[in-house]
Length: 543
Ligand code: VG1
Ligand code: CO
Image (cartoon, rainbow, N blue to C red; front, side, top):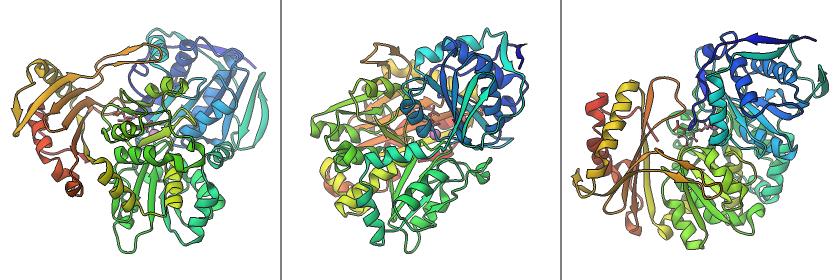
């Protein structure tokens, strides 16, 4: 078969500090665009000659065509083997696991995560390294630099590759191995959790609903929850991955997971509800009439993880992204273990996990995970919750209440202003940045600013420095507001405002978070001039 070298123009690929390259599907489908980015990845990592790569995606529109192109390019670039999920399907955590168990050199994951899919929606591609985790900043920078100078890509002139038949085939000297996407992942879960105890829970009539949101976790959840653990059939809803996610928005939060939320807040709700996102790395946990904020979920899981066999020896430490609430810090303090505060994005946890400094990690954006893989893991979080519920015999509400009584409650909410004009959003951040030096000691909405700065991170393992990772304003009395612009949106800019207030009085831990945070919300809006600059009177999404 002929290897073609096709001339191409530079594109602007994934910017450092963002999570994979995400663009409108139509952009990715332009002739040569995907090819261009794939070649930039191959070049940026120093070539794939002789390498083994894991390839799979979340099943969104263009997934299979894109995988065909990637396989023909990997072969043309001299890769030795590609391990591919059957039908082109692999959840992000399952891909991370495959890279690790098969000792592959890395992987290409096709997903725009929680962004909608379809011809008019979003597509994405990310490279994960040999530890199974997202490319580090250093690698991302190399790939990005390459996208600005690339002038040709290499591709094999070949027909379509069959992604459905399990087994090994040959593509011009490169081995293609099609594997079941669930098997290895499910085996890992069986090692970490007490499947016997969870099965017994279901046998005793415990009812659960898992909303796969028409995305990649459907087959995983069906196999693990219904087949292996014996949850009633129908426990998993929206369980067949569809190219446009049933025209939905596969983001597991109270705004987008409406079907699940309606059931959990309706009459006679199930005992436990959960949802996952497009590529299966996020999770939402909800008890009967009781939504668990991701920051609280991380703290609860960190507190009680030792109840699951995989964590029986306790945790080495906990890591959380900076905008995530401080609830986990209080657990770490009580246990006398390390706590790490990193910039937003799972890639920053990789070194801490590899070095054995952190066992559990989490982000406020519904991401929780551990050292079992190098990505956040939606179903893993669900199974750890189930394991804890099975062992303690408590309800979700009881677990939360106990937690707040013991540790206090970090009231928390994130307000997103979406598709804001990029110039306006950048000006807002610039103006806020300029204000920072003079903010301490001033008051807003009756609150006094105690400290204001811009978060920067020095990686304790490799010493790398990451600046401009979010603007933080601390208030007297334990309040905090954080501002940053999203790196995953595909339309204009998304301003994220993260709001937090610590409450330690056991009598005051049961308020509505929006009410408990009212003053901080007002102060944050005032200081950043959000309404005045964006002309938005309220956020688009509140989580
Ligand atoms: C968002 C979240 C961040 C998460 C990232 C990728 O980024 O805030 O916590 O790591 O998405 O998640 P941003 O830059 O839009 O705030 V996923 O599920 O897309 O892999
Ligand atoms: Co995701």
